[in-house]
Structures are given as C-alpha cells and as structure tokens.
Amino acid sequence: MGILDMIRGQLIDVIEWTDPSNKTMVHKYDMNGKEIMMGAQLTVRESQVAVFVNEGQLADIFEPGRYELQTSNMPILTALKSWKYGFNSPFKADVYFVNTKQFLDMKWGTSNPVMMRDAEFGMIRLRAFGIYSFRVSDAETFLKEVFGTSALFTVEGVEGQIKRTLVSGLSDAIAESKIPALDLAANYDELASFAMQNINPKLAALGLTLCSFVIENISLPEEVEKSMDKRTSMGVLGNLDQYAKYQAAEAMREAANNDGSGMAGMGVGMGAGAAMGQMFAQSMAPAAAPAASAAPAAGMKCSACGAAIPAGSKFCPECGAKQAVSAFCTNCGKEIAPGAKFCPECGAKQG
Image 1: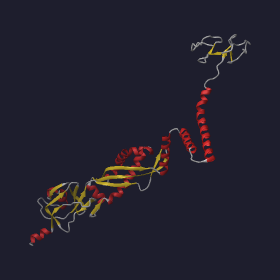
Image 2 (image 1 turned 90 degrees about the horizontal axis):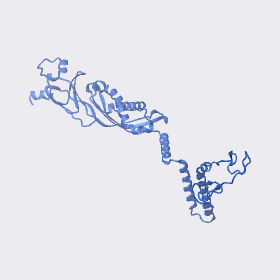
Image 3 (image 1 turned 90 degrees about the vertical axis):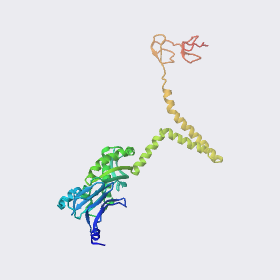
Image 4 (image 1 turned 30 degrees about the vertical axis):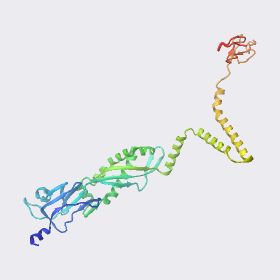
C-alpha cells in the first residue's frame, strides 16, 4: 500500500447514516479520528437533517439531498475556519444526523388522577390514556435545548417530558371546555384538538411539534360510574310505581304457582291471590276517586216561587210549596218533566 493510499485511509469521503432502531432522534457520525476530505459526498435521506458542528458551535445545516462538500455550500463553516476561496484541504468537524420523521404510537396516561369540578357531581377525579406522535421540527433548537453533546439520543430522552406536558394540557382543556363528565366521551376529538393548541407552543421551545394526540379513554371514579348506572337503569324502567306493582304481581304469581303440596301450598296460593286482589284494588282506587267526585249533585228551582232549592226536595224551604216529584227517561235516564209521554232527549215513549 502506497503513501497515497495510507493518506486516503485517514480521510472520510462518504458521509451517510441509516437508523436501524427506528427510535433514534440524533446520531453523531463516528469520525474514528479521521478528517473529512474536501469534496466528500454527503447523503442526507428523507426525514433527516445533517448538522455540522465546529468546536462545539453549530455551523451548516443540510436538508435531504446529496452534496459534494465544498466551501461554496458550507458558508458558516468556511467563515468559522477562515477558509480562503478555493480551500481544498481536509478538515475536522462533528456531523450530527437529526431524525425528523414522525415517531408514532407513543403511549401516554395519567399516573395520578386529574381533579375536575363538575356541575353535577362536584369535585371528581379522572384518569385518561391514549397515544400521540411527534417529530423534531427545528433541528438547531433541538440540538441546543435538548440534545447536548452525547453521541446518541433516543425518544426515551424526551418521552417523559412530552407525557407530562400532554397530561397538563389535557387537564387545562377539560377545565376550560367545562364539558360535563357525562358528555366527555362524546367530545374526545374536540378535547384533543383543543389540548394540542395549548401543548405545541410549549414543545416548540424544545424544537419539537406534536403531530397527533388521541384520547382513547377518560374513566370516571367507581362511585360516579355506579351513580351513572343507577340513573340509566331508572331511565330504562320509566314509571317506578308501575314497575314495582308489576314486580309484586310477578312474585305473587310465582308464589301461587308454587309446587308446594297440601295445606301449605293451598295457603300460599290463597294468600297470594288475596294480596294480588288487594294490590289491583289499590292500583285502581286513584283512578276511580276522581270519577266519583267529578259529578256534584245538581240543584233545582221551586215550581212556585222560583227559589233555588236542593235537588230531591219535596217542599220549598222559602215558600213551603209542594214540589213535583222528578221523573227520568226509561231509555236514556235523563230527567224529564213529570207526566211527560216522550223523552225530549232521545224521543223514547214513556210508560
């Protein structure tokens, strides 16, 4: 191997990176003590950004594409190193590949219940969980604020921060929306959208953006759920009084149909029958009472002086005149004049 080959072995002429783990956010290219050849080929794949760092200072940023490294496409690095035009010597710099793709199916959940004031149930505690996705939106900000100087950075490094921000944003969204606890399940999408509007400005300060936020479930405390179940059951049953009577009648019917033999079985059947009759009599009593009181006794006038006197009176309490006995139609039962041969209501011939 010649001297020229030895020199080339100490230089890097191809720079590229692929992510085998699918969870890496930033990867520092391993120079292995070598220098970068001027004119080296840099390949930046889709959903990647390459960042050159000179002595700890961010320099040039390369979007997806294929580049031949020259002073013309490295203006910041050229200025930092004070390269003159046409500089063609190898150089040293750190190269970081930032993964800008979406990191999907990230799970979130409330580690502790979230307090909420509800107009119907008062103070209640909610638990929620779901999934979200995010990505790096500003590689320079992310490297400055989050990444630091490590050689590798994965989603686990920001997962805890994002989850806590999500729970805080969701709590604010629920409080500000003032949606009743019973209606939360019908407003998952609206709550998620509202929460994202509050969360993204906080993540932008880290160079991140929330791409999607899905609420899978918001669970209420056990006592609230039991109260909801009771209320639902009452709504399904409708008239509880009629339901109670129906249940009693069913119980009596089963008791009456009991296979018990001898006098014991007969006693149970007779008791059930008597109780059933009493129950039906009570159920019919409220409806019959108004009908009985709906027809008050009608009065009449004295045939002599015209004074109002109680119906059925034989003498007038005012003048003492004897009153004619009332007669009734033999067909329709309407009151008719005494001695009338035909009923003025139905026309039926009388006696």
